Length: 307
Image 1 (cartoon, rainbow, N blue to C red):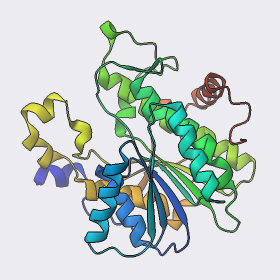
Image 2: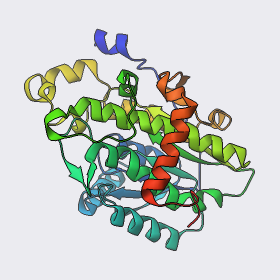
Image 3: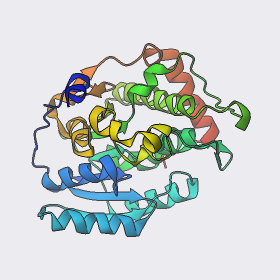
């Protein structure tokens, strides 16, 4: 317990504000941090859409939340596989067909330290953690912009302190199986999330929009993202002592989602319910712009957010 208290501020607090009638989309909301976050958003009386690969798992998660005594808010589950651009497009089309606005988009789903694999020709960490959420954000942007002022909508990209370990940023993650290092690929994808957060917020701010974009590091959390790692395989007990649990990790994410004082902190990097400085690479405006433009070109998007 000493190690956990030393490594993290376990007294992080995110006040719960009533958000009756507001709509949130949470990717990866059927497990881990996402599941705990969905529960907290429902306690705020929000209407929540869970996007997840396994709809049955999502429905079970909803049943468990309701069984725990949470009766406020509403929740629905739609299939979303961030490894498939078609799935992302279908999910966004479904959301847009049923709703005219969106108050909160939480790009939470992700993978970590998985073996080398390509998804539609793209390295899997890059696809699931960065490029897929980039595309989803583009497709849902019209709903985020439809929130009427003075209310503001918010995009929260769940990133990681692992971005700070990256020493050289590479936009074209052209790995081969022989030179592939999962931790490096993960760090690159998480750095890309922070760069995207800052560039998108700058563009939205320049257009005087009512959308705030934030990146949040929930802490090092003992979730199933560690499955398959040597640490989880041989020393699983260590994680209990040095990591946050899902509830604690979700607290910082909730803070990034609803804290009113963050409305004026667009582009910020949040950790332990506090605005902190990301890596120097993440602050590089040239990288921010280049990554954004490269992503637009790769996805053949002419104007971000215009459908």
